Image 1 (cartoon, rainbow, N blue to C red):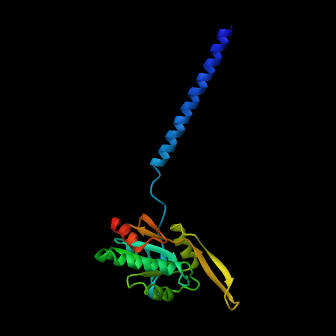
Image 2 (image 1 turned 135 degrees about the vertical axis):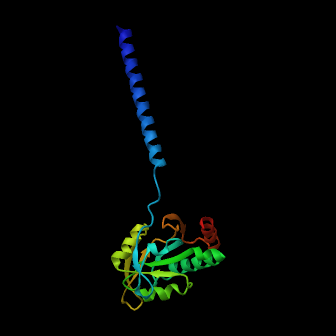
Image 3 (image 1 turned 60 degrees about the vertical axis):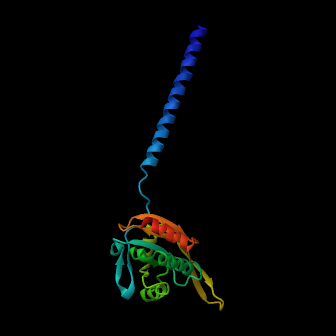
Length: 202
């Protein structure tokens, strides 16, 4: 009687262990399957903004060339001009290969950054730079596609008058000739390192 009871208990433990092991293997296989089929990075996408002379510019206009995209605003005191200078220096370092890359600056401040203002701003960094702006909705859509975070920070200036700035993430995005995301370059990357990264994918 005791022996039969022990056998039943042992069989129960073994059965439970086998079921647990099976579930663990199934779960591991499912996780591995998810990793293997994760697909492409969801960065970038269609946009329709306003460029030089008030002309509508879309992502399709740059097919066949790489896009180096950076989001910011013209009143930015440090990060934006510093990053655009690095982009310009990196492109200079590419020589003739720079023709394969279009540096694009998209304003996150459509309230102040009109097409004329953005165009004049980017021309300080090189004649090949493209400056884009648009309605708040169009800008928000482009920022969302590129996973850019930004917010309006209101404050008072030195005279006590109303003023505001834009807090935003600071990454340069390299997109392929087909418009697909290739990689991103963090703010603070030296121009020589950025040039190396660009050259690797051209």
